[in-house]
Image 1 (tube, rainbow, N blue to C red):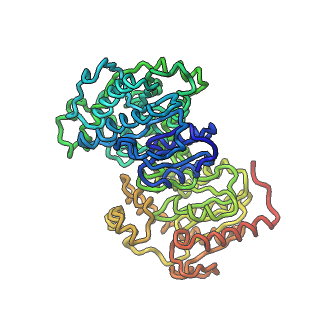
Image 2: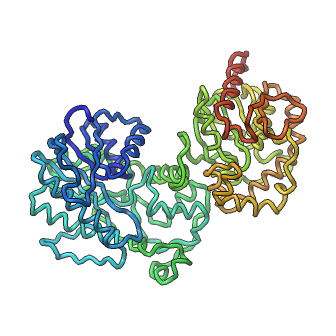
Image 3: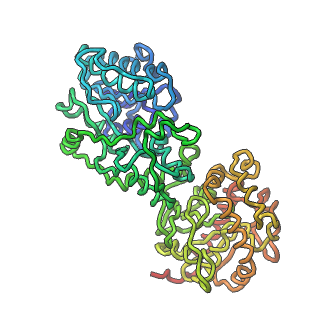
Length: 589
């Protein structure tokens, strides 16, 4: 139960917008009742992850589709002044009944309940940016056509009906009409365009060069919405909240594509043509097409209020890039983001997925095949110091590197050097299988920059991989790995399976396997002459390491970081302790 009185209630509190609003209100030390329909831990665990103090939070169960909202008898809501309705059924392909139950009937039920609050200061309703602007004087003035899509039609109907109900009951109402609200956890609408872009399924954009699909940063929108009841002049008004600097859709997609390191579509198809083509061919839900327009919106009232409230929008390019990082991190809603910070960076001209501490890591982790940096996540969480991990070029989420020219050495070396460029510490370099190569070669070339090396299941010291994995026959095998059931049987994490769905991913894994096979003898020579301490780690059930002593992890196979993270982390911690106890060379730079 919350400490102190509850002065605000948020309906739809577990949703993408609702939870950010709850967090903002709690940060402002407001007493908040978070009304949810399902599990409360979806909200509370998220708030904990964000570092939000929940001492003033009360979670209550509500059903806005029912009269009274299922909140009867909760006396501690009697002091509520501000009611926020963020609840909505946001999906495409809904029936009219499904959409209206929440978006229309639910909104009116919230208004009726708010009208019974003796100290009501404001009802704030979240509407939609493509549905407002009509001000009917009486019910029935606004005809709503559900044939073009139930979601948009229901939001349009609710927007008008709620204004009428507020006048009838004397409710102090403020309506907010946001554009696409982007941020961590938003996987619908424009996010599907980014998903198709990422997986190479966006050969052309629907619409023309003037399509305007505006966005607004989720954190900014939460602050804007939370502040509305604090200002009397916002009563009775509606606000379009969007970033006017959002580039038109083709440029928006190019911005995101450049950040992700993937090609942007060069062609566009008129919306009218897309409507006439079979959905099986286009992959486009017809309902989404109604949101594609060149229309602009009067944002002057929202900008004026924001200035009075001291709110500043972050740059839209920064917002889009951060959002794209979050989408890829969560595999577009199908996975769990890794330990942060994370995102795409330019490393030696390669758009590279980087996670962890870039400047002061004590451990730098290089993954094996067919994995990515997330394979180290459980180990990172058990280490005694910051760590840096990255997807190697062409693997995981990173773009492919340009081939090195004749005489320039291994194609990974320039990338590894660039990754280590910002590092100011002398870290322990850790490589797994294929990742042992870049770790060992860098340490051999730059002993003054490295405290120690740990080689986990080093492929170059084990029996060569089967010929299948070095032949064209392996490509269809790895493509089949994209099927999650087969991938799980082979012990491949879901994130790596998702990576394999990207164009050319299977072929790049095979190419990396060939490169590693060629590099075996050179790596053995590097190991013989290396000047920093080296620890070799092997799984008891894995192929033996030839001619070298190793720390053996009982019960582990080729992927101890996945199956035995605590045991492997202890080996790394011990290597780190030994390296820190030895006299060290000064780090370069």
